[in-house]
Image (tube, rainbow, N blue to C red; front, side, top):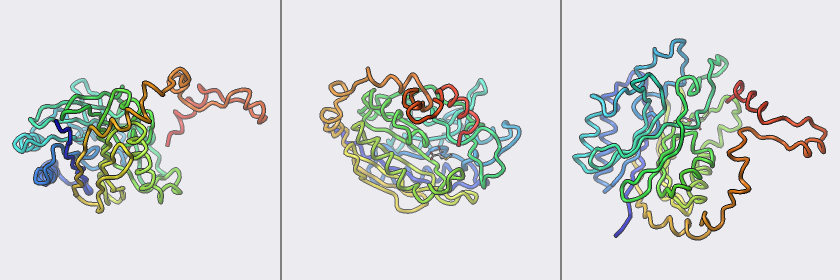
Length: 332
Ligand code: CDT
């Protein structure tokens, strides 16, 4: 039986602060219908796809921004998307801000099957940016102020394969893909909102597209999985964000890519059986990996130059715990 899924990377152009949920859901439905016409089994929407990227602003009372969060999924405003998806028989992946009944805030994504049932929910693990207002910046990146981190990476049996999710900054960390790869993930779905300008080091601005391709392609190849990276792009309230949504094969090759900064669908046929070409050869984890020598990856958080190496260099060794304390105060 063929395990080829037709997947649409449903990039979105900017969502302005004044845009209503109804406006946005209408755009999502239009992309979903384009996906259905293109024969998609699954349409992948970006991170925080229902609103503008609100962590770019600081408000003293965080609850003033609770209106950017969803308290139920589907709720009255997102129900039409679920209804249309199940009518069309097309599944989807959607990123949104989640406010739980017990008052917790997460940057979340869900995977929805063709019948409208929720097959998986993921909460962003790597929260980038800073946790306090930093007025020197042109715009804030306060994810660490508005959200709690999620507690792990899961995979889901859906669409006839093993599917996983990650969100935006997660894609820059090799641990993300490896955690999914170690659970047999064949297709990873990753929405993003990536400002082109990076205030702590503007020399990276010109490299945003390169870094995006670099991490998506290497994550796919090194774990023998399909990766779908989907942007919210364009000029959102004066903050210009990267597009270049793409579908990447387990070979690391780009199979489809968006070329605009607006609402656009890039479609690729993803043969999940192709993963075995990599998972059972060069990246046969069970045969080649050496977890017994990877202990530092889970026992230590920050980088720590070993004492003997520091002594050779005439430096005082900096302990990992100190690095972690410093990082708490200086995250970018
Ligand atoms: N949304 C998100 O995670 N964006 C980050 C920006 C990093 S700069 C604070 C990203 O990794 O693209």
